[in-house]
Amino acid sequence: MEWFTAPDYWLSRIVFQRGLAGLYLVAFLSAALQFRALIGEHGMLPVPEYVRRVPARAAPSLFQWRYSDRLFAAVAWGGAGLALAMAAGAGDAVPLPVSMLLWLLLWGLYLSIVNVGQTWYSFGWESLLLETGFLAVLLGNDDTGPPVPVLFLLRWLLFRVEFGAGLIKIRGDRCWRDLTCLYHHHETQPMPGPLSWFFHHLPRPLHKVECAANHVVQLGVPVLLFTPQPVATVAAGLMVATQLWLVLSGNFAWLNWLTIVLALSAMDGSLVTGAHPQPEAPLWYVVVVCAATALVLVLSRHPVRNLLSRRQAMNRSFDAFHLVNTYGAFGTVGRIRDEIVVEGTDDPRPHPGTVWKEYGFKGKPGDPHRMPRPFAPYHLRLDWLMWFAALSPGYARDWFGPFVERLLAGDRDTLRLLRHNPFPDAPPTHVRARLYRYRYTTWRELRTTGAWWHRRLLREYLPPVRLRETAWRR
Image (cartoon, rainbow, N blue to C red; front, side, top):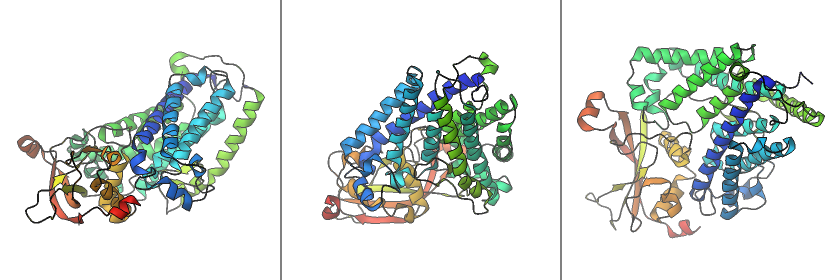
């Protein structure tokens, strides 16, 4: 069955699978280290309460049948261990059926986490990891050449990621059409990185060039993925270069790195190493791959319809298993940046002279003198949701109150999500939140003050509150 396999892509498959396993590792570690405060039994949005409301058919998950923090930890750490083994090459050291089962186990474990993660797992890169992970199950190992149908599906996924992101921009904010969005984006993006300040201060004509290049790479180049080699390799290389530019300019969890891994799967490895003969695919494997390919193509009708719609949606799953999804980001770019600053005091009764101490977050802007840090591909879920909460209190309705209660109780799991706890000995008596307008400092301000940000108070976000014992216990 020479038509079924593409031996020239053996190196591309190895790089893709090892890279994907590495991102699975990051995702499972992110879950293992943060879940207790976010969705644990005593978390802000507990899984047990969620699964009582949502049926298994709407959110299939191992935790629909049983949940405990110990079981979740076993799933997350077990998934991390398996991902590490696959990154080290375990998938090629076992027979083809076993390798497929191991990839399927990785996908199933992470699906179980995402489907009970609620708001904390509502990001597009969660679905992208699951959709990519499902295709990895079908890609095989050294027992057979990479199957052509799956290589096509990987390109189809990469096309939807890039083309969908391009369409949502060109249909969305006017600044994408007049090439001025990057006047603001580096300053207002959810979590700036250490170089974002410098990107923001690039000359404005260069920002327009960046914007125009983005449109070319996202709206024109993806079509070339379906052309013969080496054109498809060049197209994938342009996407990799664009994604690396985004990696340097911000913190977008594993979105950029996963897009890079997908692009690497479209590159012809024989251009570097030559062909690598591999065994012929067994019949059962051909049947499974062809059936799965047909399923994905049928399910693709929803994303295609969404791409063609004038009301294109971003980052939406059309099935509970996240098999085929739609993607896109930054259809609208903010012109201003507001940040929530959370403070506490040990004063029994706050008054005008009360000293308030600020909690420090790991990734989101807080102390104006602290340079933004690199965290991607690791995902700081609380910091990301704080950005949304500053846009509108509606984004924080379900979790911000429980977050404050846990600060007042001195909850250790919640405090581990923060960089700095100003009350190491005893929890505060009161906590409040205030909304500030942030902007990057100028070159002169940075030299004279050492501050990366300038901020001014806008208004109170949450008035001083005490611990409500009954709510905390509940």
